[in-house]
Amino acid sequence: MMRKYKDMIDTPDNEEEKEEFDKVYDKYKDMFKTDTFFIGVISRKVYGKNKKKRVRFGNYMMDRTLLELYKEVKEKPNLEYLK
Image (cartoon, rainbow, N blue to C red; front, side, top):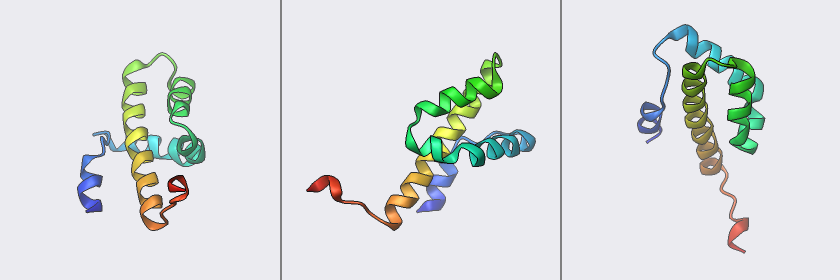
């Protein structure tokens, strides 16, 4: 089932760009998981006026962050909200 979701992630076609995005993701991973607002802030900080790259970065980071959160919840479900 995870393979199905990995296929849905909007990955960059350019391998260099993907590696660059992965480095930024590893650096700010905890912030992205806290609030998706930080994806926009970091993309604007890193890529400035390059709107196309900001959009590609934002799409990839959002997909990747949601997949990581999905994995974490699946491994260790937190049902506190049901109480």
